[in-house]
Image 1 (cartoon, rainbow, N blue to C red):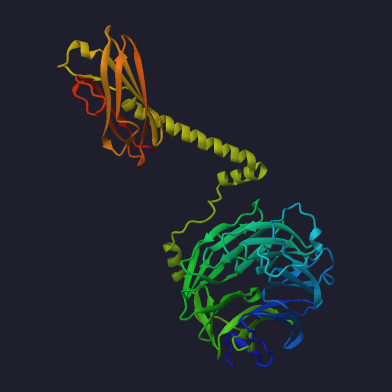
Image 2 (tube, rainbow, N blue to C red):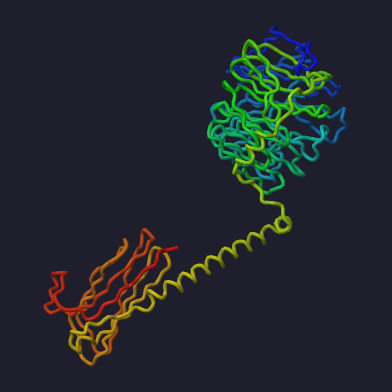
Amino acid sequence: MSRNQLWLDAFYSSSLNLKAECGVVLLALDDLAKDGTNRLLALLIGYEISYLKILNGTDVQCEISLPEMALALCTFSMDGSLPDFLNMTGIAVGASSSLYIYKNFKPYYKYNIPSGGPTNTEKPTNLIVLTIVPGNPNQAEITQLAALPRSTPDISSSSLLLVGTEHNSLLIIDPHTFNAISRIELPGLPTSIKCSGSYDVEAVIFISTPDAGVFMLRSDQKPMEAKPFLSPRSSIVEMAFNGVTIAVATSDRTIKYYTMQGQELRKVVVEDFILAITWIEMANQDISLLAVSIANGEVHFYRQGIQIEKLRFNSGIISMTCGRFGREDGVLVMVSKDGDFIVKILNRGYKTTKPISTENVTKVSASNKKKSLWPAKTKLFVDQTMREKEDPKKMYQQFQEGICRLHLRSLQEWMNVSSNNIDKADVEQLATVPDEKRCVHLVAKLLGSGSRFMLHLLLQNISETVIDSLTVMLQVTDGKLSLERSCVKLSLMLPNSQNWIKLNVRDPMCQGGQVLVMVTKDAEPDSAELTVRGFVVCSVKINISPTL
């Protein structure tokens, strides 16, 4: 045996019958009996019947059959108010739309997921188990489970259950009262839930979806909302989180490391399809490794994105977990596709022969242009955050008022610029026309600030005689403007009288344009024709600026 070998062989068995009908096995390690011995939970998923096996060491202590297809498994602390030796660890199994709770290795409670959206003031009236009608479309089926400490991240504190459903929602359930205290809508179907921290203080929850990406929730932000964290180009196979770094495996045989701020650290490409990933943490040896199982039967171990070890098996490893097993720390438990049970122990004397180079990491980080999700924590940012926590409604009102003032100021400046072209329209009179035909005064004004305008034309007879047979013609000479009418006839204008003409002008492309307005005196008026025969009395050009 090489002293510098990373893993030592501990146990191998193919007779425990850990082969699942669906080819999926979920593993978990926890101290279920509070005797200092961590037991292994193996959920064998079947199409009609699933089996939960609890192993004490290498022996099967008990086996529980579930009448439905189970999809999720987690362990949790049931009551943090009790002493540590009395605060038993519960087992939660999600099958269809029900949560099966086990305590002391026996069935304890069955909780049906509510179909509606619970509120924070909901009373625990759902302690009575309701009968669910099979095939009810309003009943949400469970897709994923996770446990989150309620007040402190200690083992002895009570936990909350994070339940992902096929209705694209996340339920936060108190297992002590079996009351759904919150419901958060998600942009996609939750397939993996990872969390750290405590709910009452500050917790971070990462939820992955097959196609929509990874979303993040924070318990210190009320109300809790799913915010986009990253959107990979390929479908997400599995996600692993060690409290500091998030590793995301995708279907294009790629694993990417991210910080909690969403910055990409490094990238690893493997040679075959990825089956499972998990973190291996040993604080006393300063070891933080990522184990990656691929379809060709190999398990790779990466430290800071560099492969340092590789194990090979006869069939692919479909599930693995690392932690305390029995009374031994640093144990890697694996289940193969054929149902083989493999246990490896971390070598206490292992030392890395090759120094970990940060050259590749620096290049990836320098080439990564993705911005952080949070701004830099300057003094202004900290002060603003404190004001938001103290009075969020007032901060929101101030923000809206500032936006309105900025919009009005921009509109005022735009009106001042465009008024030079549209408020004072020049009236051009022809020098060749007789004096009696120049006695029409034309004023044009354009009102509006968007893609729709109102054109006001004022025609005034400034002479002491009656003027008849006038025609007002409008023509678009520039741009793609739309006029309500292109011709208006005036049969009679008395001395010193005024005629208002109002027309709608539309600018669908918001590019502006020019409108030519001409007032002609008909020589031979013909009501049946739009063509006017005569001469021009006055004209004006109206320039419309592009819309902001």
